[in-house]
Every structure is written in structure tokens, then in C-alpha cells.
Amino acid sequence: MTTIDKKNIQMAEMPLPCNNLNETLNFFTDKLGFKIESIFPAEKPSLAVINGYGIRIRLEPGNNQDYGSINLYCSEPNSVADGKIKLTAPNGTCINLIKDKPSLDIPKVKQTFVLTKVKASDQWSEGRAGMWYRDLIPDRQGGYVVASHIRILDGGPVPDYAHYHKILFQMIYCYKGWARLVYEDQGEPFVIEEGDCVLQPPQIRHQVLESSPGMEVIELTCPADHETCVDHEIKLPTSSVDPQRLFNGQHFIRHEFAKAEWKPWRMEGFEARDIGIASATDGLAGVRVARSVGQPYPEFVSHNADLLFMFILNGSAELNCDKIDPELLTAGDSFIVPSNMKYSLSKCSKDMELLEVALPAVFNTTHHTKGVG
Image (cartoon, rainbow, N blue to C red; front, side, top):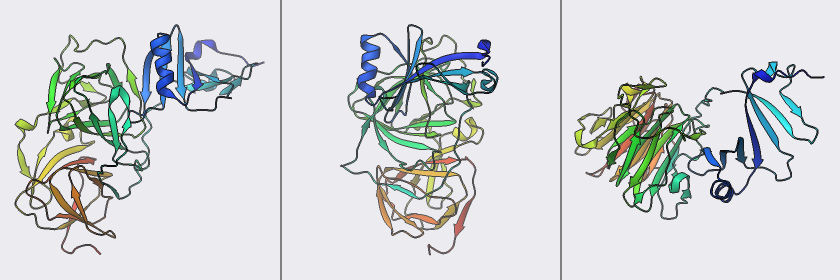
């Protein structure tokens, strides 16, 4: 007979098969009074955790013929039932003994060249809180990162709630329009406008309150698969204000375009404004907005970063890379250049601007005297 150490069990959760999440969530929350604990992925939700009446349920895709199972989260799973990590109840229900609060899983980056062109036929998917998402990195670089072009079609109040993300890094750049946001320990709600950017440190509680019609942002997050968790207890804005507070080693950053200072960029013929994320993350990531100055010389460069993502904010430029034909990029297009691949930006329009996100913040740029080939 298996000996059970009941004091080692920390929490129970019951997974239920669910292949129509929106309808099921509405039933549990609106009709039965359950509350959402977490939901992900944000761009196209397929899994949610709800809580009510002492029951915690995990709604996830599955076979409706499953017997069902219960997850018991334990401080030391191997010591609960004589080393067993799976038990079977008499009715066939599987009891899974799982390590409580597993560490954040950051997959090793798998670098590929990615070019995403904006098209009228783009498939936008409805995500969390009525927001619409366009995927900018379909291959996720092996699960390392996700980037989304997000928009809110109707202006006014946003049906958001106080929440946080279990992530390593996340930034949001306001591309069009404006939104009013509020963050834990950062004072009263404020408005981000076109050109502004925020760093959302891991697990900082925040909420989108309202937006202009057609507001658009660019969001990049590491890792790609991460949880968005609802905080039902916190009230935003918080009574405490601590702009210097560290959230898992990172400071909150609000960059305002109107106060930006432009300096020479790492590529000749461009200037850039630094968002300030490198210092706030202790070098984990760096974010800049670059623009052409005159007509940039079409020099070829390469880098050794883990990730170098660029999004064309305005105007146009021609991208030249190893082993691909020259490609004219216009506003809304984005690309990732793997390390050691030579590339250049040329034939830039006078109004060309781009958003650059790099992990880590500091990387080497090699300038090549010859072109591709």
C-alpha cells in the first residue's frame, strides 16, 4: 500500500477537455460565477484556468472521451507517494503529482531568417480582452520569442483586468493612436501615444483602461509560450508609489517620444533614440527606434546577437541579405536577421523609421566592405 504524505500537497487543479474556449469560459464565468485565474496564449487563447467555490479548473484542448485528471502541486513530488508521480483513482481519473511553481522555461533560440509582410488579407485573431493579433514571428525562433502586431478596433473603455505575465522580457511600443494604462507602484494612470514605449517587467500588475479607435501596438515577449495571470485582489493604481522598485531584477520604463534624444545609430546614415530598456533590464534586451538621415550608404553589416528583430514603422527601405532577392519593405513589414548573416538597408525614403529589438542589449556589429554573396 502506497503511503501518502498529505502535508506535502500544496494545491489541487482539475484539467477538463475544452475545444471551444470562448463559449466555455462565458458559461463558467457569466452563468456560474467562476473567475478567470489565467489565460494564454494572449494572441489566440486556447487554455484558461478558472476558480470558484473551492474548485480550480484548467480548461485545455483535449479528447472529450478522456476520463479526466487532477494535478496535485507538491513541494517535493517524489516524496508524496513513495516516489510515484502518477496515481490512478478507482474511477480511472489520473492523479498527477507535479512540482509546485516550476521555474520559467526559456527555450534555446533557434535562429532563422524571418520576413513578414503586411497584407490586406492578413489573418487577425481575436485574443484577450477584445484585442486583435497579427503574428510577426510564425516560427517563434524555436519558442524563444513571440512578437505581435496588436490593435483595438473600437475606442473607449477596454474590458481588461489587473493581470501580470510570467515572462523573462516584454516590451510594448505604441504604433498608432493612444491607450491609457496603469501599473503597480507607478502612480496614477497615464497615456501612451504614438512613438511611446513601455517595458513591462516580469509579474508587474497592470491594466489597459481605454484606447483610441484603431489603436495599434507592437509587443515582443520572451519566451513565446507564457501565462497571463489575473490578480483579483490588487487595486490599481496602488496606494504605494515606488518608481525604483525592481520586479524580478527589472525596472519599469516609460519612454516618451516627445522627450527623446536622437544620436547616431550603429549603421552609418541613420540616427536613433534609445528607449532605455538596456539599463532597466541590466543588459538583457535593448530597444531603439532608428530613422534615415539623408540617403544612407548601403553598407552590409552582420551581428552576433541571439535575436535582432526589426519592424518598419514608417516609410520604406530595401532589404538585401545573403541568399535572398532584394525586398522592398514598407510600413508594417518586419524581419529577423540571424547572427552572421550579412544584410543592408538601402533606398530609404525620407520618412523611413524602424523599431529594433535586440537580445541581449549589447552585441557586436561587423561592417563588411563587400556586399552579399
